[in-house]
Length: 78
Length: 204
Image (tube, rainbow over all chains, first blue to last red; front, side):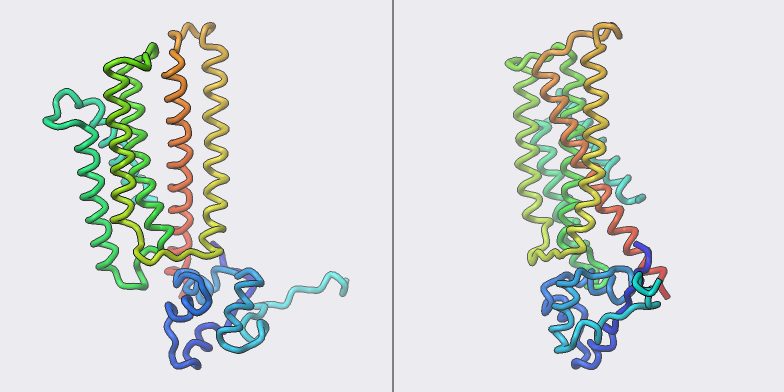
C-alpha cells in the first residue's frame, strides 16, 4: 500500500475532540481501528461514504478533514 | 510472508502426517487433528490477547490465520489420503470410509476451533473488503490454473500413459483444488495486511 494523494487532519481532530482514541473514532464511524491507523498514516484513501461518515463524527465538512497533498491539474484547465 | 509460509508448511505437514501415520497412531487421526486445532486456537487467542490494541490483528485477519491453518491441515490430510488410496480409489472401501470420517472430523474441529480463535467482537470495513477482493482475484487465478492442469491431465492422460483415475478420485482432486484456491485467498489477503502494516511502520 503506497501513500495516497489525499491526506487528512484526523489525528489533529481526534486530539481537539477530547483526545479521542483511534478505537473510539473507529467505533463512532463504524470501521476498524486498523483503517484509522492506515488513514492517519496516509496509506489509505477512503471512499466518499467513509469520508463523509468521518467528517460527520467531528461535525465538519469533508474538505475540512481531507485535502489534496498536491492539487492535481484540472482536465478543464488544459 | 515468512509467518504465512511457516503456518502453511506446518499445517500441510501435520495434515499429511496424520494421513500417512494413521496405522501407527494410538487414536484416530481425525481426533488428533481436532485436538491440535483446539490447542492451536487457544494458544493463538492467548497470544492475540497479550498484544496491545495497536499491535493486535483485526477480526478478518484472525479469521484468515485460522482459515489458512485449518484449510491447509485438512488439504494436507486429503491429498496424502488420496496418494495412499491410489488412482483407482473406490467410494465404498475401507480406505475411503476412513478418509471421509477423518476429514469430516477435521472439518468439525475447524468449526469448533474458529469459535475459540475468532474475535469476540468482530468488525470489518471497506478496507478489509478491498483486500478480500484482491485476494479473491488471486484465488480465482489459482483455480483457473488448476483447472487448466486438470483438463490437460484428464484429456491427454491416455497419451501420457497415466493410470485410469476413478470418478471418486477425480471428485476428491477437484475438492483439493477448491481448498488450494481457498488457501491462496487466505495467504494473499494476509500478505496484503502484512504489507500494509510494514508500510505504516516505515512511515516516519
